[in-house]
Image 1 (cartoon, rainbow, N blue to C red):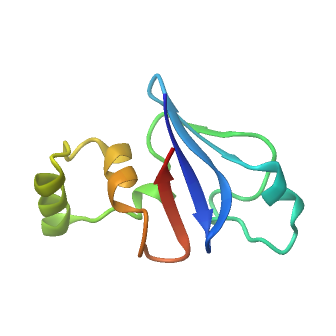
Image 2 (spheres, one colour):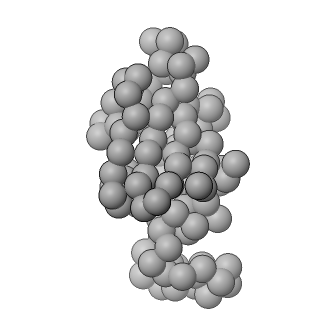
Length: 105
């Protein structure tokens, strides 16, 4: 199982994981309790239940580079272009669009 911490504006919001080709995202209880902290996206609203998907959630996929940037990152980091979670873990730790970053656990 691979896991990543997901931060929203520098605050740990939840855990993204992949297990047997099922992706899960779960908000941390502390993050849910604070009503001033926003959901990380409209498609992943704050809730106690896990989100599950057979593919990487579109929100996280949208953080990934495309085109020539994708090809360059994959070549330099030696990542399969179709391994979206590894791409996310290796390239979205800082300076992403919006306030969400991802850090491998």
